[in-house]
Image (spheres, rainbow, N blue to C red):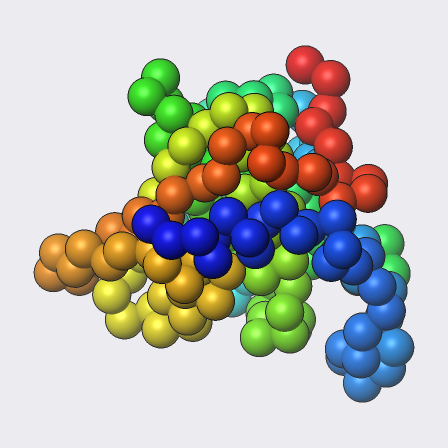
Length: 196
């Protein structure tokens, strides 16, 4: 995969992930930071801000609520095998992006952004930040399994990783993108891995 992918993430220190944006009819400060182990309140707030359709697009099934076991797994962030970042609009949790790595250096991506701030650029900032955390931890490949009809998710991944490869397989499409070498990535200010 191409040089553009590496350049995009290596320039993260020059991208202002934490800035004021015009959202929800006014100026709103968007902050992106690492999600730490056990932050159930952030997980719950973001899940509660998703419509039934957004939940279906994220989990590929109708999901009314998260089970206790699923909540534990999603909140078990260690900053290495399971890295996650969260976005906050004036302190309110509005999105989470996570990568869960395997032993081969591949990371499975999951992103959710609450409905009232979707299509505002929050998802792209989350994806850049979590990809930088994963690259800094030495992971090499990002993968995402998305519904083939989820055009917004496909556009999001290609906007950050223009050289990603898509593998359509019926109702889902697997997206694969290379991550830069760990020594080529400088994390944005404020986006650091939590202590394990």
